[in-house]
Length: 317
Image (cartoon, rainbow, N blue to C red):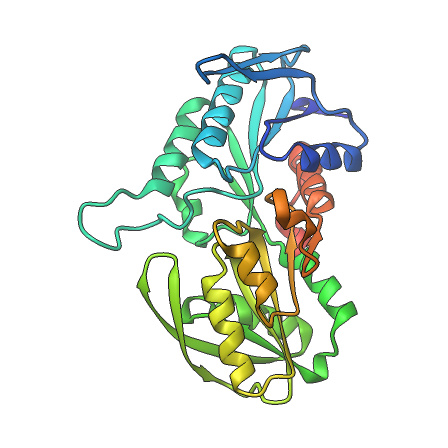
C-alpha cells in the first residue's frame, strides 16, 4: 500500500499490541518487525528490524498505565524512526495519558498534557491520531496536525441494538459532560438528565441531585473515561434512588484503576460498555459487567485516509 508518502507501515509499542495487530489486520498489512525490551536496569531498548526509509510510519501506543513508561517507550520509538529516515511519523495514541492535567486548576501546578504534546513534537512526531481527548482544546497544545476521532461512532450502533430509545435516558455525571451526553441522546433519540455533583477529594466524588426525568426509565451514564469508578457508582446510586429501572454506563476509555473492578462488581450497575483503547488486565478481563467494543476498524480507516491524504473528518459527517 503506497502513496506519495511511500509505503504504509504499522508498528506497535507494548501498551496495546493486540489493538495494533487488529488494526494492521483490518488494513491487510503486516505489523512491523521490531525488538523492544528492557535492560536489567529497566532502560528501554528498541530496534527496527526492517527498512522504513521513505515510509509512512504509524506507531500505535496508548499512553495508559504505566503512563510514564509508555510515553518514554513511544518517544524512543519515534526517535528511532526519525533517525531511520521515515518520511512521516504519526503517533497513534488511542488513549492520551495526562489529558486530565490540561489547565492550571490551582497555583504552582504544571499543565502536563501540554508538556507531553511538546515532547511528542520535539521527539520527531509529524502528526497525532487519537480518540476522545478529555478536553478537545488539547489539540491546541500541539504545533502539528491532530486527527481527533470519536468512539461514539463505535458505541452508538451497539447501544441502538441493545436498548429501546423510547424508554432510554442518557445521564451526564457532571455539568462538564453535558455536551457529550447531549450528543449521545440526540443520536439515540433518548432523553437527557444531568447529575449535579461536587468533588471534595481527588478521585472521589459525591453525587447530589438529578436534573431531568429518570423515573421508570433505563439510564445510561455517559463519560469519556472511568477511572476508580467512584463517580460512576455515585451516579448509579443517585439515578436508582430516583426510580430508574436499571442503570448502564458507557465510556470511551476503561482506565479502571484501583478499586474500580470491585466497585463495579458490587454495585447495582448492570453493564459498562467501553472500547479497547486501553487493554483490560487481570480480574477486569473476567468482569461479566464489562462489554468491550473494538476501535480497530475506526483507527484503520483513519490511518488509511491519512496515508492517502483524504478527509478524516468525513468519517463523522
